[in-house]
Image (cartoon, rainbow, N blue to C red):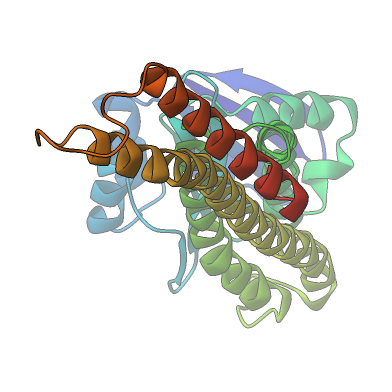
Length: 322
């Protein structure tokens, strides 16, 4: 599916659908077009090389998907690969969505094979306020990247909710699954940082307006998006440190729990040690043994056992071991 937002200095703003004569629209003086391709067919993708004259290798990369975030500069256009995270609450954890962007002198082309709700909002905003697109493709690119970075907040909120849940578990009575949850979330945060790091470098490059297609005025706006990504990266670092603290508390709790079990087992073993000695002595099979013919010898042994157990329990209690 293709939808096109076309701005002309003479006729204002309009929205088109399907394949159009993009080369003619893009070459008109005082016009800016945004071509948004959502899961394009082969016929629709053909416009990338036919109308916009993009390099065939780049078009192949776009169709193949699954590329790391990057920005490439060509003679008359920029190629940007941008990723946004999403959180799957059904057990898959953090995932990423890719959008590819081509920006020329008076056009912007976006290609994606997944849903990007922020783009729908930008189209509505363009139709309400033509200044979003009339200022040129560089400001439209900034708007798209700004919306996409703002969309990170949904994933961050999901991570924060999981951290709150883990905090309750760790500082309470953590089940065995808590450790797996902590490690899974740490992997998600590492993946988030791997997304943010190269895209910070991209935004830093755009903010320095090293390309002739990016003006100094637009560079200030890209700097704002860069700062937002920096805050997200710092937040991811704080999440990772918090999870490290959770791990320390978890293992400390586990160690304390093990010590409690070992203490109980040690006390039980200590109590039965003299009892084992006592019954061992009286269990020897000799004909002539002291106290063997006593009338109340059996009860005497049980009395001694009870005194030993009571004495040991009193001693452990006095020492604070119970």
